[in-house]
Length: 186
Image 1 (cartoon, one colour):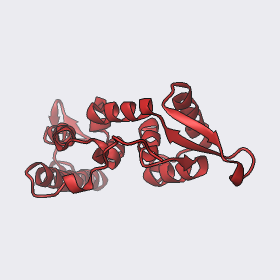
Image 2: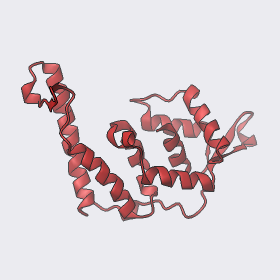
Image 3: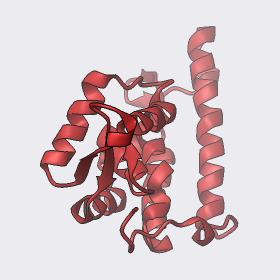
Image 4: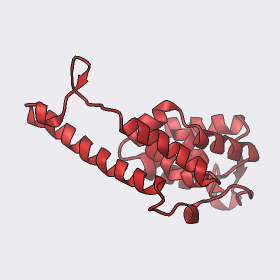
């Protein structure tokens, strides 16, 4: 998730390290805070893999640098967006990271393939609580807090499924918001 966010934000253009950190924190921070101990090692891994370029930014002061996506980084971003791992489809926060950058895929059909995977997951019966193998519905749970969890999850899932159907059925525009990556980021 962190590496995808780094690649995704840099697809929009080169950024100073501190600005990249701010954007990643804003995207994921309230649920999964981003520490320097995880961000900067991820940047170093991506740089060593040839996916990012790091340049000194002398005008910003010592130890300041600007990061940009390489051609290999663009290719990797598109690969990760086209074929997200299963846990990036099933985990709410991870999927929202995918969703934040999905417009970078140049083809609406590719975007929709990812959305269909998420919709298929959401339409499978699931719960936080089970009676054997049978998922329990909110109305079957006596504990008010567990019932609250189930009612909240149902409302979120219902809203997300409605949005996914609207996009996939063509009721919501998608093409006008795409960000193709055929030109190098500057």
